[in-house]
Image (cartoon, rainbow, N blue to C red; front, side, top):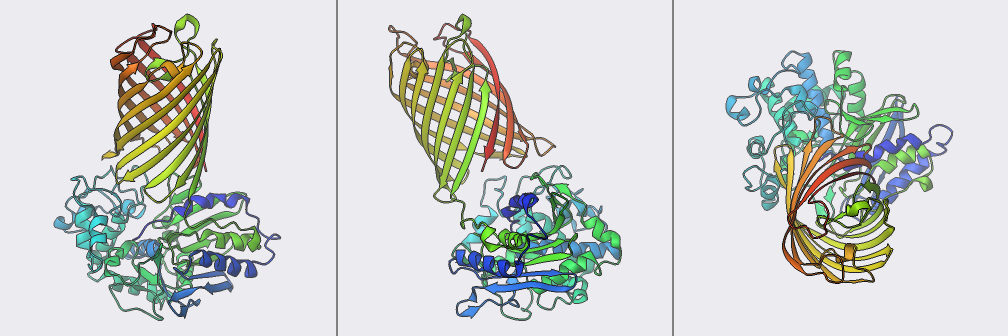
Length: 608
């Protein structure tokens, strides 16, 4: 499969990497780090790295096995996955130079009407190249008709040889966004570009690659897998965990978005050709680097190329990486290219670049193959402490008190579909009422596609004018539904209190012994990628609800209707500021306060 590597999100960390005097011995550090990375593959994938400058080779190393019993060498070919997109984009630019295509040509004029049917006819070549067409990623997006997804059909038949027409037939069933609004990575764009290239030239895609890119640049060990014979040495094995992706006919679905095989030397030739020599006009290289923000700070996307802006005057990197940790990046300010692979999806090639810049392998941190742990800390303020539709803290006039709070979370992933979450919440009242609360919660979450089930246990200790103890069990189920750009998540939540025990007759522990909510949350993206609108609405039902005081009488029935709107701002990829406002109408007023309650607040969250 062909995906853009999530590791690009780590590249912004280049700001603190030294260069120059600190680069004591990169020739020793890079091979050493490559060995550590390949060792982390645990026998599933050998690696190669090549670093060159304008004068020639600087560092070249290989480690591990290309396949059982055959060592990896610097000349060993490997599947380059989504690095293919840069080559497809360069092919399109060459056809633009020759007048066969125009960047603003529209889809309706580029493909036969039957083939373009089902896609927005006004999508342009430029939008396809920059992933701003609004077309969704056929590998991961569920179809509008809720039928079988492409990935389901792909996995069901390993021996199937996929044609572009079959892939596009799946892509037509996907929800689409308006073109030209924002970046969204999608292989669908590049399958269409492959067909546009073939339609414009009357040749198979691999023949056009060879005529316009490979032959002019001397890329003799590069070929389109499943479409033409191998060139040079036999292809090395590429793995997704322990699964070997190489030589499986269904991988033909990568095609124009990720189907090429190459070597580190050929990829270096390609990068240097882009920077000078391949294009007839120097404007083509400039046009290819006109980039859009991706939503990750300091990382944007041009026409088939990522651009990573480096801080402290270090310049920028241009290039692409691929599923399997293949990589090809050019550092124009230093004239340096980084090319190679780890042949393993569950790893990270970036420490190789870090080793070159640090010059010391011991200074390079290598993460585990899978990120098992996640951490988050957040803090905020709420104008009222609302719990299950009730003002939980008495304040002046009995209306309620606000709180300041801090929340720390630790998540442990058992796999892609289930994880354990430990959450500790600390709150402090901000009104007249003296109240503090600490509440640790342990939650298990299991996902079944778009359905997410969870169960939790929570202990609450509230201390102030009185001490309150509460034990709670809860279960919930939520289903994510995509409607165009909007994601809607209806959910049901049931909470059961084992307790409470309190030396006074008020507080959160006396709020409910059993409570059921029906809720709908939504995420509505805005044209600006850093902000969205997150509305919600909920309805609560009580079972054995008790009011404050010694003479409390249990109540069963409808509790409240609640609605609100949060506006999260993505300050960086890890830091989010969110503000919200909410309203609750008490269907049964159990506390003697206003039936119509308005409140709001703000939070700041940091994820690691």
